[in-house]
Amino acid sequence: MDERFAFLAEWYDPSAALLRRYQLLYYPKDGSVEMFDMKNQRTFLRRTKFDEIHPEDLFVGNRVNIFSRQLNLVGYGDQYTANKLGSKKERTLAMIKPDAVTKVGDIIQMIYDANLIVTKAKMTKLTWKQAADFYTEHQSKSFFNNLVQFVSSGPVIAMELMGDEAVSTWRKVLGPTDSGVAQKDAANSLRGQFGTDGTKNAGHGSDSLASAARELEFFFPSTTGHGPSNTAMYSDCTCCIIKPHAISEVLTGKILKSIIENGFEISALQMFNMDRVNAEEFLEVYKGVVAEYTNMVDELCSGPCMALEIHATDAPRTFREFCGPADPEIARHLRPTTLRALYGKNKVQNVIHCTDLPEDGILEVSSSKSHSNVMQELHSHVLYSVSFCSR
Image (cartoon, rainbow, N blue to C red; front, side):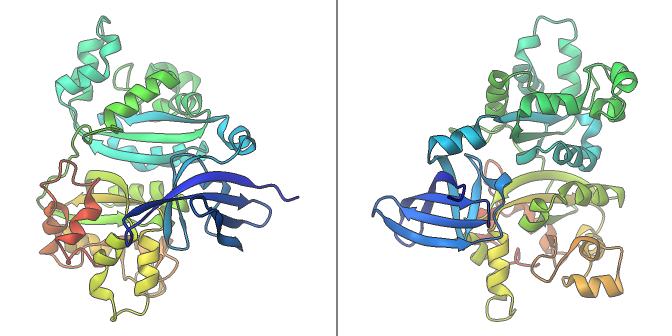
């Protein structure tokens, strides 16, 4: 009998305004899936080969897209799956400190090279009080004030990492707390490459599962609110979205590094998921005009995206030139060094969305400014801004 993994999955049906619950079965031998409707006790989807799901996508808390249905994996369907896939899976908090924010591309690549996955991310600037609350366990230490002062001196990037033994794995990537020691004993570690001393040491990692739970809740609350606010500037800016296929193909780090090395400032950053209704709204101007419209919608809601506010003089024009033509094949012929030429696959999976028109740059970032967390709610503002529909 073929090995199979079972998950409990939920899907919100917008037409019926109901939360539907399924058992999702995945067969690693041939990459096929099967779905069982738990309420009606009947097969919903017969076993079908589905190449867009991979074993690393299957963990509780993740979202997977099965034939245009975005499913939340809320539990393991049997003990075998829990033992096989869940026993070593952990979540931990990774924070890039102000001295290493410009190295975010390299750092995210190091994360993926360590077989960890970034499941949440946000750039924020902590107040002195927020930084003190975050490091409250060190309040009695001599270095506390210097640490709080440094961490609140500029933007940081908080990330939730997921993977086997994520707490210890991430701390190994970080290296020794003292950057001087790291440079001698672990030169290839994050702190060995980017740190300066024991305080300006490029990154932070939770030291236990209990600390990880507390620190993740600080940045990414599971109840109310959105945690510390993002760093969007709403001036001299343009919007960029790294598309789901690029994230799943582990291109995020390379894309971010290229953006920064070409002189653009990433002034805000956040990961989010777009559901199908909002993706259709987002791309509505292409409906009936672009042959790839349906595929474009499928791509945009197929997994997590990363939204960036790009800050530069004449940002919409210069950044769009840097991205290249929407069709990667044309980009490779005409502008072979652009992002889409380097990493794009076709007109749908062309790596990123960027603002089309100069006047839309600020609009795309600020039209949902009333939200307490603009970048996390970025998908909501398509309801207010049709102009956010450029590819």
